[in-house]
Image (cartoon, helix red, strand yellow):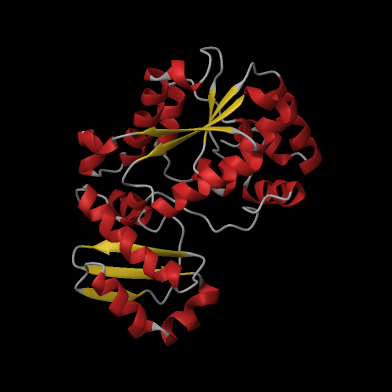
Length: 279
């Protein structure tokens, strides 16, 4: 259910966000370097100053290029940044990759923050994360983990959707304002297919091929020995022109077969499998 604030004009949502953050004693921001968490980190820094710390979970599901970008963004914002090694692959529920995989991932992060609280921030500072109202209508089991660990979602509470976050980011001069959406590497794997570090590394190598060729919005979906490439609809024509070169690069990354999805990038494409199985 959408919060009542979702229907407010942007200026009122922004005032609500600033007011809510201003009441906090401090904030530990779960920070991936994506559009939403960067906007939240900026807002926390503006409201709380030095009482803001960014925490990034470093695991095999996070590409090295994304970790480096998160580190750079935290420096640009002048926020203390703590990188915590997490090991969700030690959790059977995560490795099994059922429909609740994201629950186990978020739980690992929140448990790790709690366990290492002394080196992160004072006990009284709540953990906040960048969930937005758009997430409320999708399959997001990580929200359950957040609720269990009393993690706050200030952007949701203030009624922020993706358009609001991008508008805020542009006004603040954040270079993530138009950054394509990103999700962890495990989201490329069909539910029910077991996940391990070698599989995630193969996907990361394959996606680096797309990144090296200058594509902005892309996914390499894993289907056993087949890699299915999704790129933004506006980039499809170029991808078809480069299909042989891309194919050779993805094969070199560890796949036997490569397909280019004619429908292009679709957010949460793997969630469709859950919907179809529920019918």
